[in-house]
Amino acid sequence: MKVTDTIQQIQSVYRGDQRPWVIGFSGGKDSTALLQHVFYALLQLPTSERTKPIHVISNDTLVEIPQVSVMVKEALKKIDNSAQQQGLPITVAQTTPELDDSFFVNLIGRGYPSPNSRFRWCTERMKIDPTSRYIERVVNENGEVIILLGARKTESATRAQVMNNHAIEGSFLRRHSTLPRCYVYTPIEELTTEEVWEYLLEVPSPWGGNNNALFQLYKKADGGECPLVIDTSTPSCGNSRFGCWVCTVVEHDKSMQGFIDSGEKQLEPLLNFRSFLKEVRSRRELRERVRKNGQLLNQDGEEVWGPFTLEARKEILRRLLEAQKKVGFQLISIDELLQIQRLWKQGGRSITGPTADTDFSVSKIMRETRGETAMSGYHDLLEGGVDPLLEKICEQFELKPELIERLKAEEEGVAHLQRRDSIFHKIDEILDSVQSS
Image 1: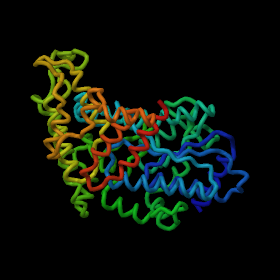
Image 2: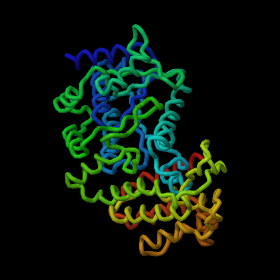
Image 3: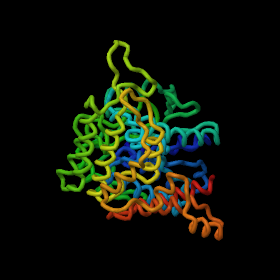
Image 4: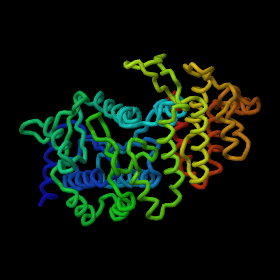
């Protein structure tokens, strides 16, 4: 009865106006249940009434637990293919943080301390901003949008209160707390956790997804999903949720430990690295005694704890690349490594001595951890130089040498890995960036 009522409600709201929908999809149980309801609601409408565009967006922080990341990417492909085959007006997109906002560029490049509950600098940069940019683009093109989320009142009393505070009398919609011209619609808000799982395990996925596999993933992770975060009022990761594998906000990563205990032993290097990040945050000798704004003392007249020292950042990078070699898949991209070296070369404030790195330490650390020569195109990219033969060939075929250098560096950066799936996505990104420039 709840499923029937919810589908009828979705159909009514969908036909109620021309404002496009943006559906937040994290790949977890709630967002999957939400999207299934929407799929079935649309499929039961006549083709002539499926006119309003729907955007299904998922946020990739670039530091998701690998198993979850793979699952979400596969789900998005199936959703996209199924929507096209069944004539549904659905556009699928995945948002990612800007290069300068990525976790490792800020942690290793700028020396930001590992996040904690008092300084959670990662959420806005990696989650809120990328998703908000996408939504704002849709708003600018259409005037207003309706955002669909898999939020449920039974998740917590706080969640229920937030939802009730923004309710619009006589409407299924709520005002968005921060995004102007945006409204929020939560069709499955009255479902319990047990009802969500009952629905997913009894009703087949309309795009051919495997909800039994999703259930098993939850059992392994020993936790819940990280929701699509669109403002600071949306609960971010924490407790035993699965999300970013580098998360140091929680005391213990129960999700990662759950994966390992269930047989995913290859994740142990990630858990060890995450524990290292949490521990080094509190080591005074690894932190600068001046903040980036030049502040030496806090309001109480005590010495401040600034960013990680350059030497500390080098050690963090070394351990990250060692973990990457052990797990056999890419944890940090070539573009991130390039940006880290640029930031190191610029240097920063310190009262203990110069902080600028002019020795191309990133490349040196890569040689040390990988046991091979540095990538041939890496120094060329950093120093702005181009091999004369390559330049001549590019001129003949009207190509940009920088494009070939980036492609070559990206390929060589994953050549030693067992799993190289990420290279195809990265090649597309590089080619898209060149076309748009």
